Image (tube, rainbow, N blue to C red; front, side):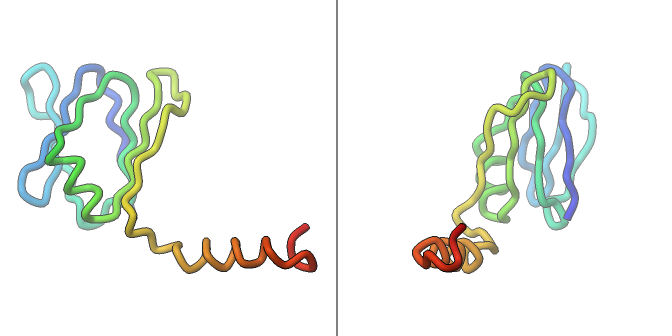
Length: 101
């Protein structure tokens, strides 16, 4: 799965069918196919439309927000994580003193 960074100040990420279209200063910068996208990283002052957010969440794509200098601000993930079983097993092991160190 690919990770794509959008870092141009003032860029806007919109949904166009199954694509994300990135534009800045009224000009198209590129299209991102969602089918092989694992993570979208937004650096700085980037706008993402609700339709684009919904598409990403529906497809299980994480959205990470960073400051313009790369400091972590936050992350949005869908509830449909492929790691649910792993997390449950980890929490169960925490209850077992012999396994939890």
